[in-house]
Amino acid sequence: MENINTSKKLLLGLQHVLAMFGATVLVPILTGLDPAIALLGAGVGTLLFHICAQGKVPVFLGSSFAFIGAIATTLAGQGLAAVKGGIIAAGIVYMLISLLVRFVGVDTVKSFFPPIVTGPIIMVIGLRLSPTAVGMAFYTTNDAGASVFSINATIIAAIVIITMVVVSIFLHGFFKLVPILISIIVGYIVSMIFGIVEFTEIANANWFTFMPGSEAFTYLTTMPSFTATGVIAIAPIALVVFIEHIGDITTNGAVVGKNFLVDPGVHRTILGDGVATFFAGLIGAPANTTYSENTGVLAVTKVYDPSIIRIAAVFAIVLSLVGKFAAVIRTIPLPVMGGVSVILFGMIASVGVRIVVSAALDFSHSRNLMISALILVLGIGVDSFPIGASGVTISGLAVAAFVGVLLNKVLPSEM
Image: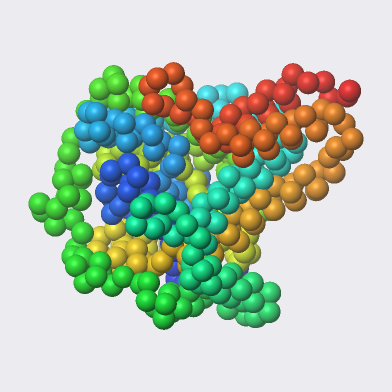
């Protein structure tokens, strides 16, 4: 890690941007927010996170999927100002959780997340994302809006996957560090041959995103409004995402080989999420969260230097400002990103398996079987759980994590 020069770090940073780009811009597309604002929020939010976490945690922050339903509902019903107020309030909730965790101590927090809980939760994080990867890699949308199997998409995704495997295992030196970047370039070229790359968006894009009068400029200049409905719909979701945050930070630490719950401390990492989300609310970006996609990149490259993540954050900021560059990345076809995601998400699930194996958990114990079984089935099988008729939902991952934490505390250690 110490021998990587600046030019190589720039390429590694670009690789992280490519990994996070699709999911980060997908959230604003689904909710009605602006993708360029989301990129700006992700880049600045990541830098703010690294300041809060003392620059020790190689984490990238991007748009959180947990807030999609609440943001979309609030935006449609009350407008952008109310969404801004709700996301700012969510950032404040994160900060309050950080203070609470700082008060009760990291050992108390860790007691809720032993390997029998964190291992299956991390498996769920990767496996829950697998349908998304498969959908992007092997399917396309027909004229009727239905998802159908595509032989062309499958060929492109397969070439990307094979390239990534070959580069990761058989090549040496710097090429071994950038298998994702190489795979995306190869996939992009193959996609051009298949004629599925759309260059019109690049031609039509402005060089500067935030021109006065543009939609992005309007997002920046709209003042937040703290309506009761907007705050109640959006802010409490931070309480749920906190559980996912523990899983993501644990996963990141497991990949890197460090316990980030202790150093710099989970109170600092959750504070980083809070400050980043607060900033996102100010500019009209979706709430931020730690990204599993980039943890997958760490697992593949085995390069854990946090400064590379900060380089990626600067790239994201530049992309948000330069419309042409952002448009180029937006033209990367879904099968290409799907092929990459198949491996990245599988790597995350494999880290969970490694935690279980390393802890030498005894699955002849009914206690361990019950906890892991419920986490896996609820986490993978439950898409979301509605809270009343408010339109607010809790992800299956959060439900599974809550059940796992609860069972770990109430079931006796010896049965």
